[in-house]
Image 1: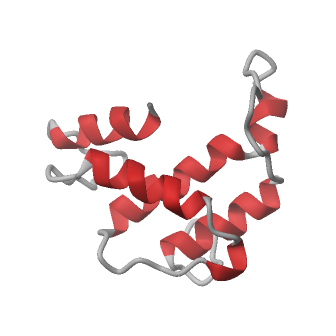
Image 2: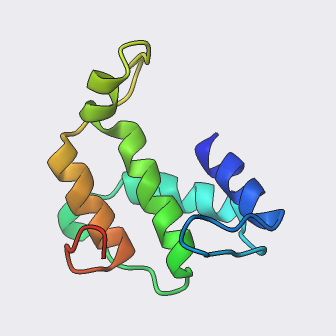
Length: 106
């Protein structure tokens, strides 16, 4: 749901806090990309230069839906059949997907 909601906002002209906007996000393509990326181990992840920086951020953000920190913070969220990983692994994976060389927030 996350990718559908966020791409829906951007496609309608949403401008985020940093002044970023993009109206041509491929919702279905990003959902498929996020699913395929999540199935790859961190050591085999590669930066995808076919996506815009904003699209990379959206895909990287979906990694946190599998993060144990999210489930510790949100006691009402249920972990039905997800394979959870630590916050540190989520950070590493997100940095690889974004392609920022491990610099968080950069």
